[in-house]
Image 1 (cartoon, rainbow, N blue to C red):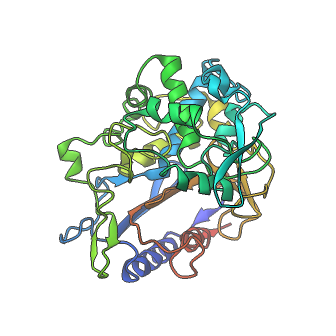
Image 2: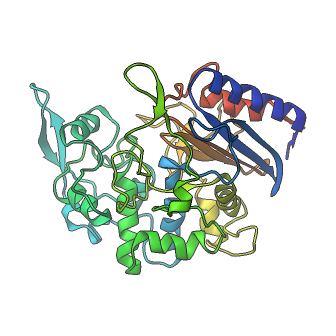
Image 3: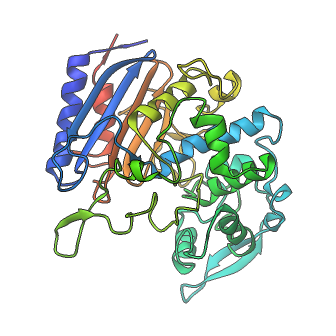
Length: 393
């Protein structure tokens, strides 16, 4: 296990976070790095809400967006722990409309049309690795999302509505397992709905009963209370005149375009730095929280960060990338040590676990103006390297 030069770490973190604020890409942010279960560093830069002077605090509430998926990975593995499903369970067992699904293509006029029936049954493994082709990020999938009005519709009230659409109306954009393409909400929504059906309870109630309450995460919720809304940070954006504002599409919502009642396993949670670090630590510690409460068996917790796909599979963002259970696994990367795994969200927050060096990282920020992930001054890769560069033997 490598050690952390704390002085260098904090200098690096503060520098990249300050540049992000100065570049107008976020109003403020806060991050925490733990090693071996102990907080090594917590750095806060900027302010929490537009028009206020208050600095970002560890109990300010952030929209997680796709960092919600890390919690969905645990609820799915809990179902596997209980022998309710396996990674190879065919989802048509729960959703018959997915049996022999149509695969779409783009015609000469740019329209999405059915091409052929799929020969590969979609499994839980395809959902957790983004190799399912359901409302995915590949060119055909992106065109399908555009033509159907987005990931979700205003008429969707809950998970069942969304899953009914995916099951009965949406086509696949490729043969399951043949490539990787990010399924932003659909894959996790199917997993979450599956949990609802197995446990006969709404997904938000399940998450509360079996994850957030046991781990003492009171501010990790799908529908914030009035007091919690008062602690939500600004989602920084700009209007047509270039003036900063609190993103209008996100006001009153936990993820843009989704009604509050739509408890998406892929995108709808809010949380605090304190809460999310408790969750992250429970995964690194083999499924047991720092308070001693076990949410997952050691075997299943350790499976989350183990590769389920080939490295650099067609469609993946990086040649070093592999996928585990809803997490990106990095090996051969120049910005993270081998074996690190985690994910980020569309509003900018990100997290990863380094199992070799026993490090947990949680970085909270909310903005629609963030630089590209590869930005050489402020992007995610720069933040990752600011941690990597502080490690020494």
